[in-house]
Length: 186
Image (tube, rainbow, N blue to C red):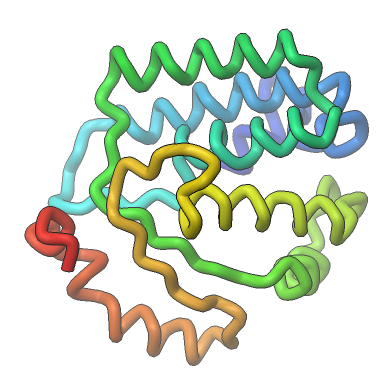
């Protein structure tokens, strides 16, 4: 799971909520903390043959930071500093991934699910924000025109109900959970 609870409470502060209230002011703060918490997940000791992560330092940089910058809500200096941090992390620490499972969902479905989830911080998120995030994911993982993709991408159409998603997971279980399959691009 992505560490949302940490993003909602850093010693009594809620950087996630602050960022959604004023992205121009708090985008760098949240994204710096996101990089740290995602790096913690990437470098945690491996206790099973497969490590599944909801998101990664890669998606934080290539989607969320990129979107803040493109939307004019992150000054160029903040963008450059976060990019430098990310580049150092990638050069200095093993944050490689073997497979990216892209649960492709339309912005409209994301918006409906977000409203059903009812996180206080997310009540202010407009559909346009989700459309912009979706566009960054598509550019990165589908067309490859935004940033290089460092692993094979398995696209699963995820505008489905839970029962259908479980069925899709079962159909792809071996591909997702078997390391030998990642190396061969199967």
